[in-house]
Length: 263
Length: 224
Image (tube, rainbow over all chains, first blue to last red):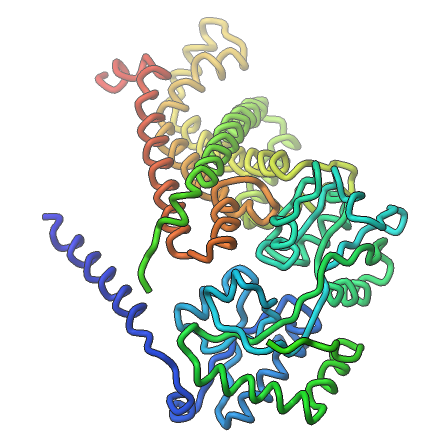
């Protein structure tokens, strides 16, 4: 009596596994013949990724992604991802490449293959103007709000300040809101996010306090996508040389492109 | 892609700790919420128009807005009126508020189904309004809607998963953190889902087994 639903379930599970395992290595010619590249971007990380007035993804990463697709000669399909799901999206084949301000770390490089960095950011702590915060020791016993899966998360997981409470939220906006409403003493995010939060909240009481670390962001492809990886490196090299990358960075971030070591 | 559970199982204690917190939060919130719902039902028996309207508004407001929005409102909004709650306390408060609204509505159904004869008999032997409510109406009313209350509690337990958004330490936030470290997303959430399944089924079984102890009159009433 129960056999039918059970066998249907088993069939569905088999189908799922078949779909997952049928991902084959990606080549340039397969992308070109499909005339489409699916690009994962963040839309909650201004000015790199955001939703514009028309509710479309926009920002430094998105413009660079479109430039990249144009150089490859295929149509870009821009797919919003989150801090937490961006690597799984790539691994499961829902996207072909991440242009999602993904910081280059050896840990992540076990899961995805990074290109040479195309942009850079710093992880910083920000808090109320009245709070004295000039050294890392002063983070002890504070409530620190961060976005789950962010570079701040990685930093504080590795080096938790003594006695501090780390409050993890599902996005940078919530982490900022927590500090702004007094639910946390300080929040940690990138220098860029602090700049755009300042622009959006001119009267809020916070400022950048401490720089924790700097990171280079790379595009990322699946571990076996060597052709695409090499092509992306060449693309990044060319836009660095011809000044397009710097111009794009100036346009969105309002500061010159940092000097980025090559990968 | 092969599923590899090693990384998840090695950190199973993280998930189990989250599961314990989920259970604790749900149990406390379920208890407070149902207690508050009983108070609201009791206030209703006074047939005071403004009070009943206020209760109806409360119930409809909570039942017709998303749980996550309520959580954001309590956690991010309440500090502006000076009420600053830790994430877990905020989570418990918002869960209690949420379940109280649903439980009020469920109990109302049970109370309205009680035959008039019960209350008339109670009044004729001289019981006050409140005595009638607590001794005569509430026990059989609660008993008749007990299965609905149990499923509401299960919904609460599963719904608490969205509270990772206000940084509450429960099972889903433990799973979120873990999959951020091990990048084994499917495996981590599969294990978390398994734990949720085990929790909700065993809690449901436990609560149902309590029924005869909680309502000793039930058997005779059923057989009648």
